[in-house]
Figure 1: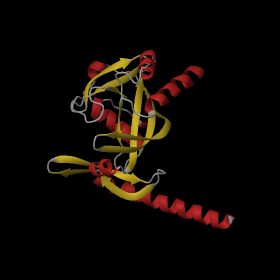
Figure 2: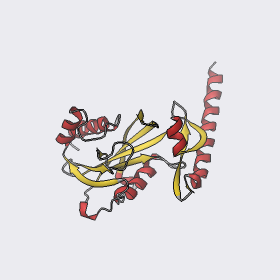
Figure 3: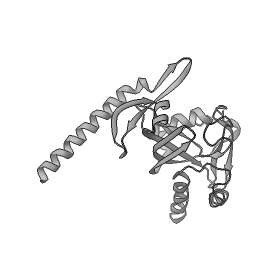
Figure 4: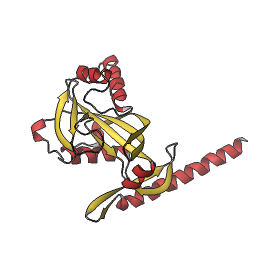
Amino acid sequence: NIRGSKEGFADSVKTNTALIRKRVRSNKLKVKEIGGNMEEYFDVLNNKGDYTGKIESREKCHKEGLWHKAVAVFVINSKGQVLLQRRSPNKKMWPNMWDITAGGHVLSGEFGFQSIIRECKEEIGIILDKRDITFIGCSISTNIKGDIINNHFNEYYIAKKEIDLNSLKLQREEVSEVKWMDKEEIINRIKENYNGITDKEGCWEYLIKYYEWAEDNLV
């Protein structure tokens, strides 16, 4: 009945609110030092993207294929070029491939926009403010490389910003170099079976959709 449905919805909202509060309080657990290495912790989601209330390590999430959040941002300049990073040759997934400007996992206790701000600063030394970034969409993806099972709920963002490449400080264990790439080159690489760029599901398609929207709206 309608009353029962409303009560069920209200209970669901209360449950999710409680989980979010618990998630924020658990912020101190998002990175933990183990044996000299910094272990990341993620909020575990179910296959619908809801918080389960569980927090697990990066290693366990990737080993067992537990669902968690990831983010990606494309920094675009006034010429419509996208700042791309080349992944380090030491990366387990997509080594030496050109990739999004920055991105990664959403740590326990974070929201997507916070992860974008953190990743940009950590990986390539770009300082962003919440007002600099625009959310453009989301998707789910599964990437399996060797013994890594990445089940992601992805969030995609755009940041319009002029960047002096000489001012950037790259996190060398993550990024080997950066460069501006024209829209046409990115589209051609996608058409050529992701020639030289990561074949991540969703993110490049959302970039193309953004370009189409920007062209239609003269942005």
